[in-house]
Length: 456
Image (cartoon, rainbow, N blue to C red; front, top):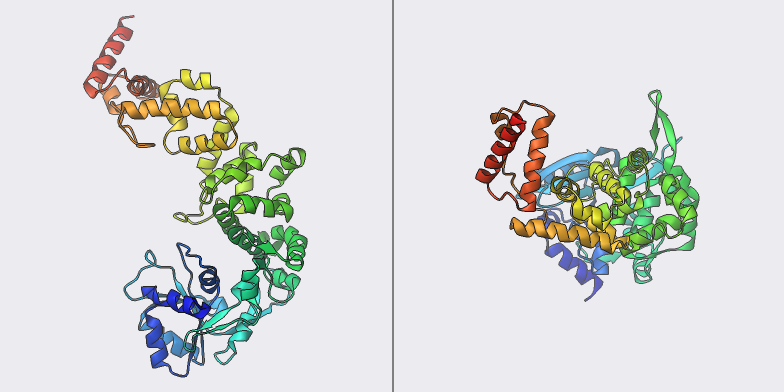
C-alpha cells in the first residue's frame, strides 16, 4: 500500500475525524494538514491504543477557525501560549477519544533569558506561513512530517521517512539548539528510542548526553526555587519509556547518564554492582510498577519517596495509565526487603499472610520474586494463596468477605480499642485456614472463647 493510502485509511477509519470532509468542502481555499505522531505511527504500521491527532490549518484566520470548529463540537484554547485549540467533535466525549489539536502554522523564537523550559517561546501564528516552516520547529525528523489532506500528499522536508526506514532518532536541525530550547526533549528522544527500538544518531546522542545534567536545573520564582523542567513532565516521559520497552529504556537511561542524574541512589548501587539492574531486562511492556519496584528495591523509605518525587513518577494524574502509586511501590519494596524464607511463609499467621500478599500486592510481589530468581519463595507464596483461594472459591485477588465485623465483637461486650482487632484477626486466621467456614460457627467460637477468658 502506498504511504499516502495508509494515511488516507487512518483518517477514514476514525469516526471522530468525520469533520474533515466538511471542513475542506466549506473552505475550498484553506489547507488542512495532519502532522506529528499519527503520521509516524501510520507509516510504521503501529496501532497504539491512544492516537493523538494534530492538525494545522492554513489560509484561514484564527477567528474563522475558532468559529467553524465551535459549530462542530467543543473547542477550547487551552494551549493559548502556543496558539493550539483542543477539539472534541459533537457526539464524542474525552472518555471516548483524545482531544484533537487544531492549530495555525507558527514560528517559535526562544524567549530572552530562557533556561530551556518548554513554555519559554515567543510564538507567532500566521495562517499564511508555509507548512514547511511550521515543521521546522519540531523536535525529531520522524515527527516533522505533514500530510496534506486536500491534496493527499505527504510532505517530508527533513527526511523523516528515511529515518523511519533506518530506525533512527534524529533531531531537526542542530540537536544542541533543539534540546536547549526545550530540555524536556532530552527525555522524549530517549523515550522514542526505547518505545520504537530505534537508534539515536551520534550528534543527537551526544547533545542529549551533554545536556542531561540540565534536567535538574532550577530557577527563582516568587522568592522560591522551581525546576525548569516540571517533574510531572519528567515522570510522564519516564513512565512511558518504562511501560513500553523497559529493557531498552533502562539501557538508554544508563548510557545517557539519566540514571545518574535522576536516580543518584540507584546509580551508586549500580556503580558497585553492574548486575543490579539486570532483573529489569526480564520485564514486559506494561509492567511499569514492577520496573519501578525493581529499580528502587534496596533504597530506604526516605530515599524511595525522595526519588519518586524527584523524578515525578508519583505526580501523574489519578486515572492515568502511567501513574505510579507511591504507597503500593513502597509497600512492595518493604516486603522484598524483609527477605522471608519459604518456612516463614508456611508458618505465618493467615491474617498476616493476607495483609502482606493479597489485595493487589501479592501478584506484584510474586512477579518481582520471579525476576529476582527467588523461585522457592515465590512457589511457597503461590501455594498458600492457591489453598486459600480454592478453599473460598475466589479468583486471584478477589476479596474474601469476613465472617465477623467489629460490630459483632462489640455486641459481645468487648470494649472498643485494640482488643477488637485482636479478636477480628483471630477469627480471620481460622476463617482463612478453613477452621471456620460460616458466620454461625464464627459467632459460636467467639462466644466460647470470651466465656473461657472471663472464667479464668
